[in-house]
Image (cartoon, rainbow, N blue to C red):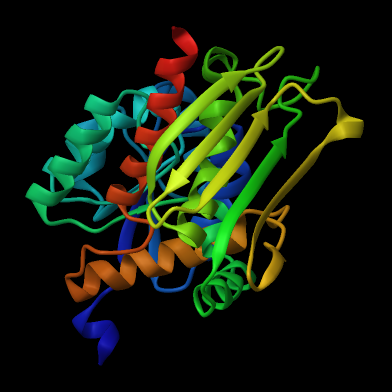
Amino acid sequence: MSNLLHPPLRFGLVGTGHWARIAYVPALASAAGIEFAAIWGRNHQTASELASGCGVSAHASFDEFLRSVDAVAFAVPPDVQGELAVRAAEAGKHLLLEKPVALATRDADALAVAVAAAGVASLVFFTAQFQPEVRAWLAGVRAHSGWLGGSGTWLGTAFQEGSPFDTPWRRAKGGLWDVAPHLVAMLVMGLGQVESVTARSGPADVTHLVLRHEGGASSTVTATLSAAASAEFSEVYLWGASGRSVAPTEYADPAPSLRTALRELAANAAAGRTDHPCDVRFGRHVGQVLAEAERQLAI
């Protein structure tokens, strides 16, 4: 009976690059309770080739693409995502967004306003936030008080020769906008929203942040995409009266987390709910932290 009342949500994919192929295509094709229906890309030929391999439709027109789906999953650079996601929200489509939701605060604000005005559901795919082990860890963290601080480090290797993640937008924005969002999201979930940030730069794209959270806790972030393969590393931990607690590591395969995100977005859409811990408002808050850090680094 529930399937009759709530038919599978028809998802369309925006994007045809490496991340779309290794994460979104397999997740969309295997997530229960949804239908992978269409693909749109800025290069229609590439989109058509990818769609043919997936057994779904490709559309040359973005508006035509929107008319064919109920929800849109984005796997494009953030400066491209912002404008297209506003158009999708205005068309009444539910949104599965990539982080960061936009590169400019005004664009993130415009997207949040469009989502609220349309009354559509939204999720931002902070990968670890959709892992059961991470959710259990965060629940345990919240069950204890007295956390005084935390730290997040991500030494990424996207700028090493041959990396499929060595893309123009990452070269322009570095680890601050690519991997730091994951760290900031974890620290916000564990310690509360950020009230202020202080940013300092290191060599290459190395960025250091000091965050002050609501309630007085503080945390630090170090992020880069310029690490050598032998130095690749990521970790988040909190410390306080309960000791030191290290977060579970992020899955190497993003598909299981993405399937969870797809199912939760579909469930919210069916229930008419627009709130989620990782909705567009949360994504905007993380982006505000990054934008202020970038402003300071430019001075």
